[in-house]
Image (cartoon, rainbow, N blue to C red; front, side):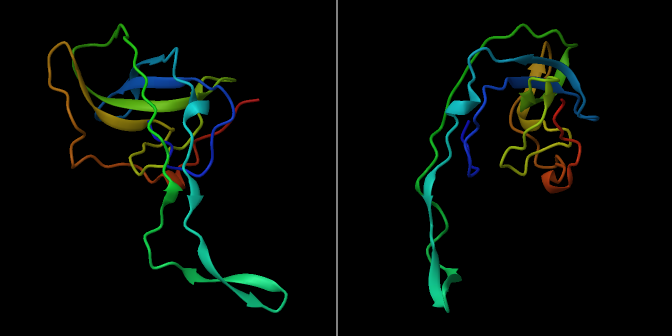
Length: 156
């Protein structure tokens, strides 16, 4: 996992792994990692600075550098692994990750990726249970627009 966003996560919320139905994207099985700590997923630091000019008493952005926008110190990759017993019918499923709000154990965090389904689950590959074939996500897979997903919420 790599935090490509701009902020760290401050709370120890659970990370869910799930198998999603390929047609409906509904979870058919899920579990949480015991050792995945979202607080360790640190973003990069020292983002490319804009070019500033003075306008009266204020400094204003005059434009961005012609260099590619990037972190001076890129985010680190965090690896975590666990073995799960999967209770799902034989078939091929979409493997997805999500961060759960512990108040209701529902996905509540958007990842900085365009590979997203409404509801906060982020597909990362295909997994076969029993028979079938896993692998990369098909190029024809349609993702939802994370910017228009209004289903994420926090429970009191």
